[in-house]
Image (cartoon, rainbow, N blue to C red; front, top):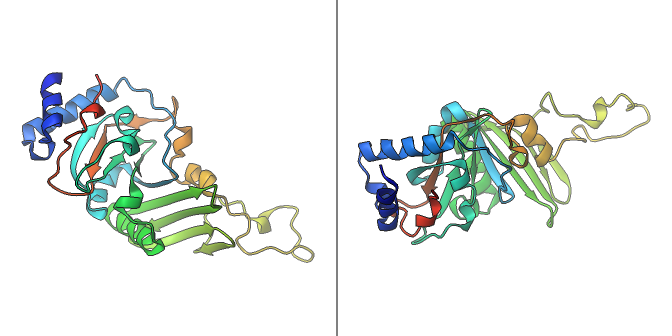
Length: 243
């Protein structure tokens, strides 16, 4: 598919109506361009999900995303800056990065901002993809959250705002206060889970730290741009695809 035809499809907003052949050509284009990419750190807008690369397909159902369009890592990285219309917010699903796919961009509009909405989303993702993780950081507000869910159930969760809260058993990599060699249970006091890492540290142990993506990160395949409403296409997103 030549570049001007691709631009015409984007401008017309017909990418949600493409036939199988054109979809394959667009995917091939993204794969070819991705071969020359050198991934760089990703600003995840303080909130992102991670799912296993080999079972990522279920995420589109879990988050009710539509009209996905193949893009490179670079093309999807600025998803929050892309225009949207008719309530269709774009979300970026990264290429596979060290075995994981990250989901970023406009999640407050796609998932919601209530606690129950957050937890429901990560549970749905894990039910569809086998496992899912959520990470949230708000340095200004002092909030810090990371969640690991498997097969539709939360296995481990750490939440900190005013007081820390833990759910589930500690994971093997967690460096807890009570495990410190200098900790003496006769004289020292600590909460059972005290010392749990924050989201920045946890994501590096659990999947991928988006701020540390770089030359050593193994990247496979292409990414996807998907919309939160069906049948809208990608009109007005022509600037997404750069030569």
